[in-house]
Length: 114
Image 1 (tube, rainbow, N blue to C red):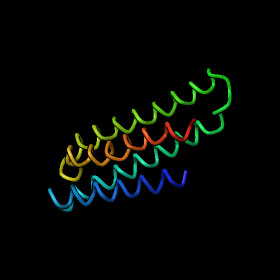
Image 2: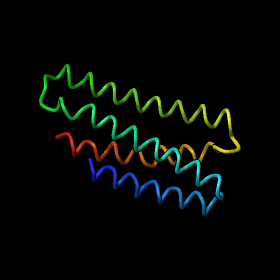
Image 3: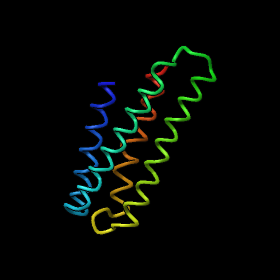
């Protein structure tokens, strides 16, 4: 899990820096907050799936589905934050922070669960 956390922090920092460069401080903070949310969700999903890597397929898929549900909750959080407070959470940097961390970590997860 440590490589995942380090990669997530690195991606979050890069995306926040790009958001700062293109849109300023508020965008960078929004991107950083949702990059952190994505990292916590991904680490939680990995913690859910780790104990059942060698379990029967039904248990594995149940835990994997719970992790996907967490990821969907993150997408809903983007919509809520950007909808309720667009001044502090502009939609594009907020979504970029979340998806820019979550999607690469999802691809990285495949290598971890083999």
